[in-house]
Image (tube, rainbow, N blue to C red):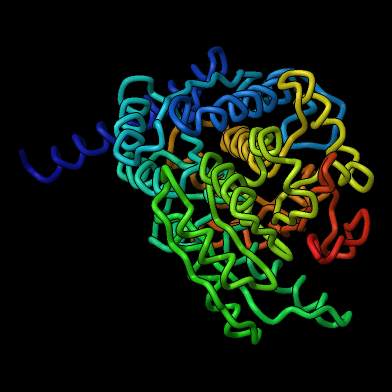
Length: 418
């Protein structure tokens, strides 16, 4: 084959690829667009998956039907950029296992032909799933995994709209500094964290900020996740008796921690949790009577509806489906799907690279979300740096926003235990 023939052959191949891409994009206008959802649907954190399903199905309702609310894609029934095409969700169960998550992501991409994946609650699973998506040039939207290391791997198809643990933890210490400025005694911190990437990354940030802000870490405890007993660890916490206990635990561990503290007669002066299990209804159903005054970092609180009407609208939709309010996890999940749908709509395509470019170009003002965020705009690393976190406090009946002052619905109870 001479150079002229080679050129003609190459041009023909390129033209065929372009035509096939156009055909695929056009066909999306008449069919459902499959999006993979990789979450724990069984095992110790199965309730996370149940609630996530409600969140994503609520988001699909907002995308696929017309709603009179100021949110991405809500105004039209379906995606206008693809002729009104509807979103279809395909769920996969990672069971809390990073390797199972990797396998499920690959199955969704190669067999179910999903155009993007959202996940995955456990940071350790989001780590493997996002790497698989990168290999297949399929966008991964990290809805709720908060380990800072996730967006620092030079991935081009990774996007996280919500805050990560450095941002959340900075808000915690800003709050502690504000309490000290009011004359409250806060000198010592106790760290309690599980042994996966979530707990390890969380503790690293908390340890650094404690040193930077002048707080002494008097107890630094890593425990095995899903441990059958936390008696020895809680005894250490009780002996240290720090001014603030900062736990980073998933659901079953959070319940066991609180039960063990009660059995051993340990009442922390204050608790500021890294959400996770301490944002779950199942935890408060089980041990909520022992958690009055608990503070947790969050991305959402129901009382935000006073300042952002869309928050009440979306919470009402979710509540009618799930029979509970949105929380830190489900709010981020729901918003993540709206952001992804908006990118697909603007891309006018179901091709991975085109959706990826549309996600990278996202610029959604905060008032067009139901979150307390300034905006949704991704950096080159895929992280939204304007996902402003809040702190919420449990009163025994529910949560209220206490920090920052601009969105606070009331003053904090401090200390939670005297």
